[in-house]
Image 1: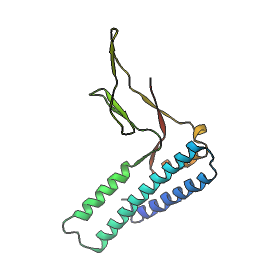
Image 2 (image 1 turned 45 degrees about the vertical axis):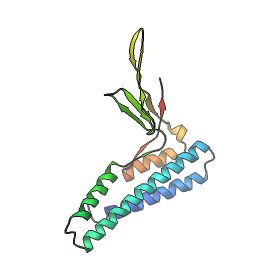
Image 3 (image 1 turned 30 degrees about the vertical axis):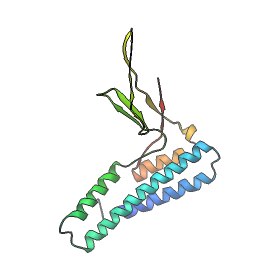
Image 4 (image 1 turned 90 degrees about the vertical axis):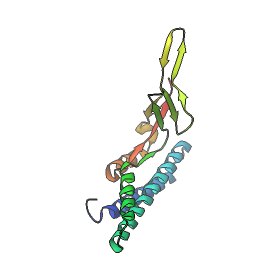
Length: 161
């Protein structure tokens, strides 16, 4: 933590971005973009809840003795979680290279191996990021969230083949 007001500032920034996303949603008529706005708003709400948890733990440590170290341990865990936090708006792809398997959005694992008389082929799907044109007015908001709040946002679709 860089200073005493860092998480208060982070809370204000995240809440402001969430309000911006909700306001931007009102002018959106495309069903796909409405869904992306909703997912981004939910992700920001999740980050806000974690920051609130961090500030509550900091307040607890400042006001009460932590003889067992449990509150300090929880605070460290929450800070680490927030540092790695990422919002995935569309698809998430996991690849296990050791077993040659992949799964999309936490679903079932699928084999990437195919064998025939010509040999063995390994074919994993890939992620392709959506363009600014596809994101419309959401694109500059997402860039601002990434740069000002330090929250990673993934917006990609899975391509097979």
